[in-house]
Length: 342
Image 1 (cartoon, rainbow, N blue to C red):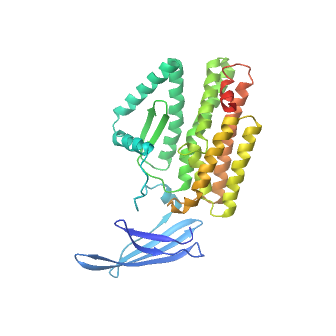
Image 2 (spheres, rainbow, N blue to C red):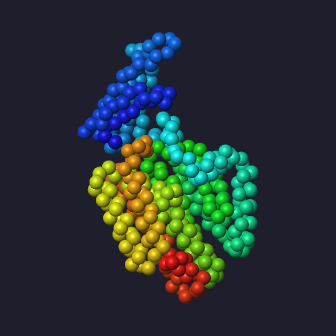
Image 3 (tube, rainbow, N blue to C red):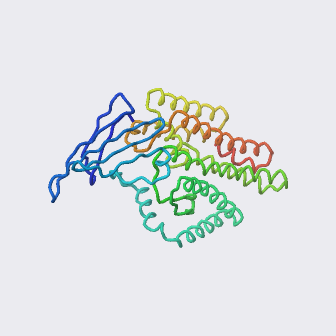
């Protein structure tokens, strides 16, 4: 993020500008392309301003300007990125499963098949009523992700329910910024929190324990989604925040925050939550050194603070709902807290 640029043509590096002490400023790429029609001389001028973000560019080929323009952060957030250089990833079972799912995710019938399989699977182990309630929670959670994607102008494939693995909101477009990653990731748990609050209000109005049970279980479900473990929502959120910090102070703050979270979890008797928080934090901190390899525009200081507050408020609210319901004395309503204390 300090002026370093790399320019590709047909997946080959044709020009590179070294990093400088100045974050903003002008850069020039001069290179030649060799083809059947001879040598093509290319000259690309780029001017970058980070705060507020704006890129101005001019493309000259054989001493003739062929393209020029500007892009702001809003343009970046509402446009799909184009492939620059394919990143080689290690092949594993998760990758194979993801690849296989991508091969048939475009078929609309698969949504119905997966939804039916989910209802049947959950009904077999629990009950039809519980299965339908769980499906409703999952769909509402994933709908939050879909709404966030549409806000950024991204094309979506819809919601897929996977038996015993939850739900998945799929989009056709990739993200350009860390802010997009934060908003898309946290809107699912935020919608889940809203659903738990509505169920809690219905429980207070009607006295029907079903609504209280649904509020507690849904809160537990969304709380686990906010754990800082990839590919869960919490992993994406905290990764975007920590990877936007380009200093030793940033990584120290992340480590301190993780240690504080683990300490509070054990002090409150939430052993399982503290253990998973520790595992997820170590995973994110281990990947922090790779943050420069990302092409996503980072969060600024205000974005980091706002995202962190949003995350902590959502987590605290979900824990508060679980804690409140456990205080009713009902064994069923106290089950989510017992899970966290296990």
